[in-house]
Image 1: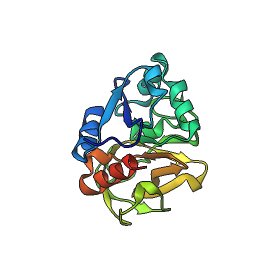
Image 2: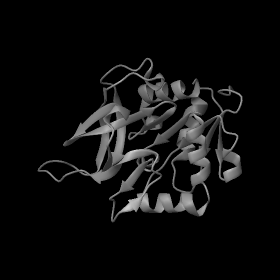
Image 3: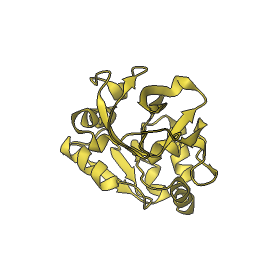
Image 4: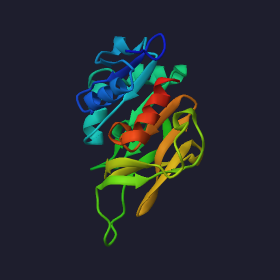
Length: 208
């Protein structure tokens, strides 16, 4: 099995991520991805993945409880590759309004808000949807504009800086499906569940 650089890929386990399916997706591509649970394990990571499913409040509380916030911030600030998935995207922003108001990691300016209720609009947004590429990044190499990815979410990010948006999707509201800034990347969809396009995205990340 290949590694993806000297330090390889590491996936953060804080008790709320779909980390095994992400790990298996990298393995299918031939890349080894290790699970990390302790702050000191993150310090030497070459590439870091923050997955997540569930409630924002509980997820950010677990990161803080396990002393994982500072190592994540240090990794991102170092310029090493980082990939957030679903809730791992939402936690990068300042504030979430999911069942209250909860502070996020504050890496990117913006909020996490709920889809507006509308006749015929199903919430959560669940299933396959088209992503419009807003800017090219290494993460999206070889992925066509309009590729479909798999989503499961009731809340979405509203960045204050639109320049970080690398891909848009529409479900009632038009929302950011992919964000990218330098070597920081994150997706609202689940690439590990998105078949060929999702595997290509993970391969691109592994090869950074």
